[in-house]
Image (cartoon, rainbow, N blue to C red):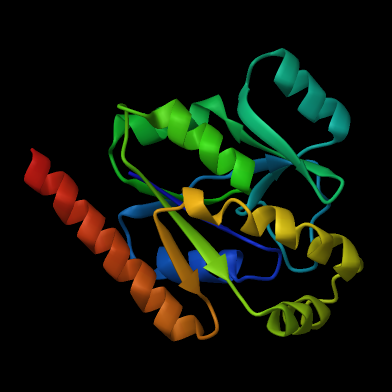
Length: 186
């Protein structure tokens, strides 16, 4: 099963994923390939960091299933990652943009269960979070917000992430519910 987390920049995707991975040994992180520079304190566990030239080469070699340009950087899903989800040995979680969510659901249709969760946060809280992480271009990130929110109807679940512990608990319950549905199918 693949759990997709989407939401505006600053909605808490990465923080929640870290928390979920710490609490669930059957959950693995599906890395995203990106041309974005590492943030302070970020490790290679979060992304496969590549140059734009390397990204273009990977595209030419059909190593990337889907990609999207977000905030002047490219983000993509590796074909090798999709193969691991289809194998079904464990569950995977990934943060992905709204167009990537559509592509991944299409790619995995009838091959693996996909659950999509969109995180919302009030705009003033988003601004505070972006400032707290010293985001250099807050206006650029906020300008994408309306576009992202227009895709919210595509998601299986929508959670207002104003409280980390409550949101973490809600996502854990969603995963357990969906796992039970899958077990009952077999």
